[in-house]
Amino acid sequence: MRLILLTIALSSLLTMGSFVDSGVAESVDPQSGLLDGKVFFGHVGPKGKEANGEDELVFQDGLMLSTSCIKYGFETAPYTASRQGGRILFEAVILSPKHGRIEWRGHVTGDRAEAVYVWTKDRWYWFDAHEESWFRGRLKTE
Image 1 (cartoon, one colour):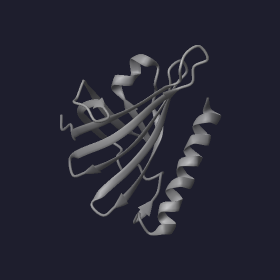
Image 2: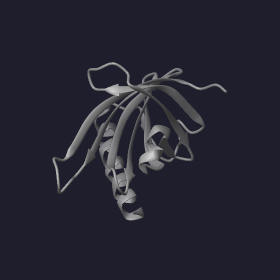
Image 3: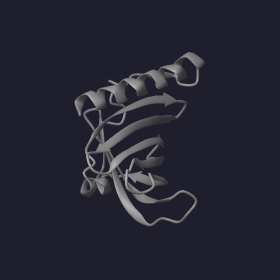
Image 4: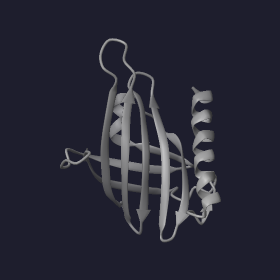
């Protein structure tokens, strides 16, 4: 499991590095914990549709957690973050032993966070799962 997380983290670093080369991002330092200590509460929904639930994104110690995914076995995962203008861009891939993976890509501007995420799961008995969704939330201050 740790090898998979390390591979994903390194892959994300290489992807983020290409942004640096192109001059899109001002800085990239996945060790910096740009969002550590922040919790965003908001709504989620399927791509192109209205909200159908709530979630909290928790950033701590270089890890991200989607609290609504805990019940499906998804745990914390390393996140990468970089500054671009007045925004902080972030990415993470969270895994569940039974329910596949969720790839998160989003940004934080001020006290607001927006993200898109894609849940996938390969299945041998039925069609593979692929669902695209969104998150929009605000910084929790309590």
